Structures are given as structure tokens and as C-alpha cells.
Image 1 (cartoon, rainbow, N blue to C red):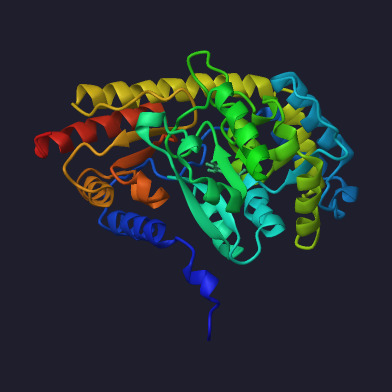
Image 2: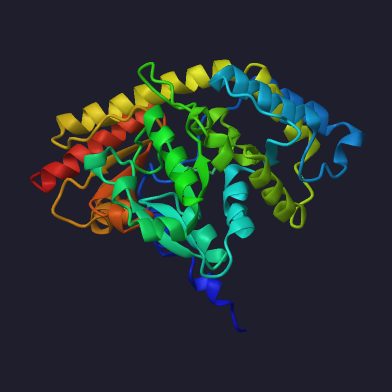
Length: 391
Ligand SMILES: Cc1ncc(COP(=O)(O)O)c(C=O)c1O
């Protein structure tokens, strides 16, 4: 068998090492507290589950919906955007459903990147950005996210030749993995930069609804000129705890949306109709209550983890958004060694920062996806581990 080289260009190694480690630990009879993958443990609104199950019984529900999905779902996305961000969208041309934002983001590269074309990718960054670009055989220009800049890329430091070369830029706030948030002024700066260098901006807004301490993240589309240069990807996975349902949507520039639709219409035949109906119910129905409940739940979890670790001598910033905490490695180890040792000795599984790119080294990512009792237990285990390491 001769595999395509693109297979080996994907960054699966750290995740498979973590999966092997988990199996090894389970076989050794250890009770694990898994704070690695960002899959929500909370339930979607009851109304969403009801719509999904009732509509699935409808004999007429099993046709292809095709890539554009139903007008009702696109209208619901536009209405929700207006309510949440006061941004006007044309549901016919400026909204497209996706099968999770992962689907949309991975395919957007195919619409803009030919072999060797360059894209600006945050480092550290959510892996699909680099992997999607690698599948399109594009060239990555990393945008380093550094603590001293609040984990925002410093666009003024980017070589203008590289900026001119880039066709696409990916951004993501609230950010995975750094949990940083972006002020509206940053998005204004991005829109101007993209117009100047003719770059298509793709803002991954998966975590705008997960924010704390009364902070409400902005939309990139609120920035002046944003709709002329880019789009924003939304996910129902985290906002409404619907990760397994695979539903999201992309909004913004009509030409970018059309290009993505063209790619996707050659790949998929759309989302199951009851899923679109359930998504509409989440956006326009009882979803807001779920968002508020999630915010309270994750905020409590964040405080248990961050305050607990601080009292154990491990200090880290308290994030304003996302479901993650981004913490400096508290020992003299690199991030991978720390994660492996903590897992083997304490049974707490985190993700090494290096898994998100070279600028992630020195950090680890914690996903707040366990209940409060498990998080308290995890903190206790971390405390004993750090005491044994004399931190
Ligand atoms: C930043 C970011 N973008 C996109 C996704 C994928 O979301 P979806 O479930 O909508 O594909 C995730 C999932 O963890 C994420 O963290």
C-alpha cells in the first residue's frame, strides 16, 4: 500500500500518545481524571432533545437537505446574530450551515489555497487550522501568540512581504488553547490589516458564548469593514452542549460563503433535517438559558481549578472565556514530560502545550469538562504531585 504524503503531514502523534497513555493507565487499574479533550459533559436544552427525537420520527425527515440546509435554520442563525451581536445578515447569501465548525474550517482552505499558497495560522492553535492547511498542501506562516501580547498576534511585527503573500488568516477568540479573549479594537485592526494585504479572515468563534465575570465576547463581524474581508464560524457544540450533533454555521462575506458552499456541495449533501430543526430550537428557543447555565457552571469549575492550584503553589491566570485554562508548566520539565509524569503518578490527564504548536511549549491546557467534585479531586492529586516534586 502506498499512502499519500498528506497523511503523514497531519499532527496526530501527541494525541495518539495521550490515547495510549490513557489505555495503559486504565489497564493498570488507575482511576483517571481526564481534563484533556474539550468535549462538553453537560446536556443540551431539553427542547432541543425533544425536537430532535420527535422530528426523527417523521417519515418525511430523511431526504437530503443539501449543503445550504433549510431556510428556517439560516434565518434562525441570522436572527440570533442580530440579537446577540446586532449584526445584520442576509440568510440567503451570508449564512451557511456546517457539520460542526470543524467541517467548515477544514474545507475553507480548499476554496482559497492552492498547493504552496500561504495562510496565517495562530501558534499555538487548534490543530485543524494547521491540518486543514496541510490537507490543501498550503504553506503555514505561524502567527505567534505570546503572553506579553495577551496571546493576540502582533500584526505590526509581521513582515509585510509575508502578509502580502498570505491569502487567508485564521483567528480564534475566546481562544483555544490559551483561553485569551480579544477586545473589539483588535478586530478593527484585523479588518484593516486584511483589507490592506488582501487576506481573507476566518474567525473561529466557537467560544463566544462561554464567558465569565459578566464579560461578553465580541463578534469579528462587528468590526468596521469585517464583512468585506471575512467570515465567522460558529458552533452549537459548546454554546448549547451539542458537540455530538455536529452542527455549526458560518456567516459573513457572501463570496467566501459561496466558495465554501461550492466545495461542500461536492462533498456532502447537507445535515439531517431534524438536526437543523433542533439547532433552530436552540438558537431561538430555550438555548439562552443553557448559555447562562453553562457560564455559571464553567466559571465555578474555573475557580475550583485556578484557586485550588494557586493554593498548591501553581499560579496561572483566570480566563475570561472558553472552557480551558492555559497554565505555565510548574516544574522544570517540558510540557510533554510534565503531562506524562502527572498522568502516570496522579492519574490527571492534561494536554501539553506543544500539541498546539511550538509556541505552546512551556504551557499545558486544562479542559474544564469534569464536574466540581472531580475537579476538586484533580486539584488534590495535583497538590500531592507538586509536593512530591517540591514545587
Ligand atoms: C477552537 C475550536 N474550533 C472549532 C472546534 C470544533 O467545533 P465543532 O464541534 O463545531 O466542529 C473546536 C472544538 O473543540 C474548537 O475548540
